Length: 366
Ligand SMILES: *Cc1c(COP(=O)(O)O)cnc(C)c1O
Image 1 (cartoon, rainbow, N blue to C red):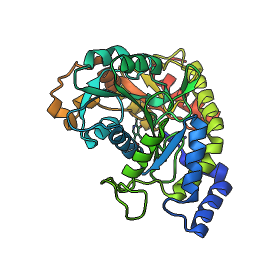
Image 2 (image 1 turned 180 degrees about the vertical axis):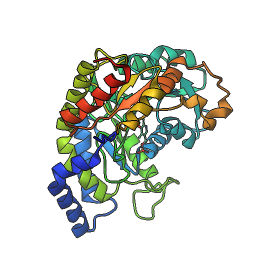
Image 3 (image 1 turned 120 degrees about the vertical axis):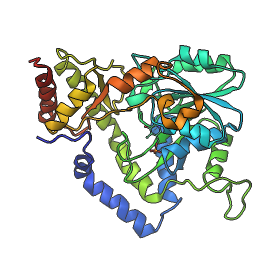
């Protein structure tokens, strides 16, 4: 059997009619950039998450950079980000002109550790970006306390966590702004790049929308310089069609994750901690024998992944910050030991059983 890490074809097969119709409508209306499909999706997504304003942008990385700029982050401003996430989180800080400050993640949630944020504070700290890593909600109540007590902005990177929640409240509604990615492999994925910023403040939403569209509202009425980062009509129409299925897909992800945890309980792996609001963008286990297990799975047709092979401070890209090994032990531990098992909503029990059997065979457990 051959099991990929994710299978996007299975999802398209199930909703082909809706997707093809959405694409055909956009072409028939030549509503390629801006227009009614984008406005409709923005409204639907804002309402799905429960945020007042949604600004569609070109991708999740731009969403973060534009949100930071829109919130006034610029030269000299320090922004605290987790040491374990995709580079876009920290990259956006630099893109906005700010200074990246890393803090370690919590070993259980794998998200930014609020205590480590407190330790990373300086008089120049202006904002904190909490990342809902692998779909697990970050400890937003605690992060909100830290940022409120210190007069800081709080931004959510929810690129992996569409629909996740904590304390009954969806991620994307906790901070001053929240950023989503619709990269095809994300829980809500477009058929190309896409992203969105959610915010509760109309003025900020307005500024972010202008930043994403050459600093204008009227065709040639440029009020300041921005950039070109817009969600296109085709992606918006596809996302509207897919949004209607997201709750079901999340249920499926959670069901499969629970089944992995049940079937792998007797293995040598450390399993991820469940949380009621976890949307399992990834199901990430850890083992000191990660490399050998990964190779064994590959030999047997199972496409596991590593998210991510380096703690961000250890990357060449952040050499300038001068962090030696051991400065972020939890993030570095994940980089060395984490393995993402195949998971997508349409994965069959047979496919999952095969992955589980290969893992048990590796250690001779079962
Ligand atoms: C995917 C991702 C992003 C960036 O999104 P793009 O749409 O690929 O630019 C940002 N942060 C995290 C945590 C991500 O997983």
